[in-house]
Image (cartoon, rainbow, N blue to C red):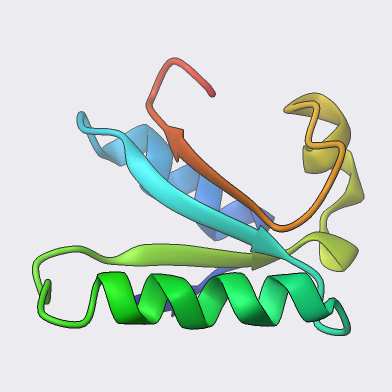
Length: 83
């Protein structure tokens, strides 16, 4: 259900998929991020066919600037043509 990725792996997965990829951006010390992840866990509990990629924004500041992610948590559907 959850798959942690870095920037390089994320870009590869997005470029190889024709369907949009759900990506959850967070920071480890953010309380709202932890709560949002628990809510997503509850919503996706019975949906084993959906994998959500999770990415620590602290480790990819260039990507956050490029995709204009200004806050966290953020849940985006990212396709091969971008956000």
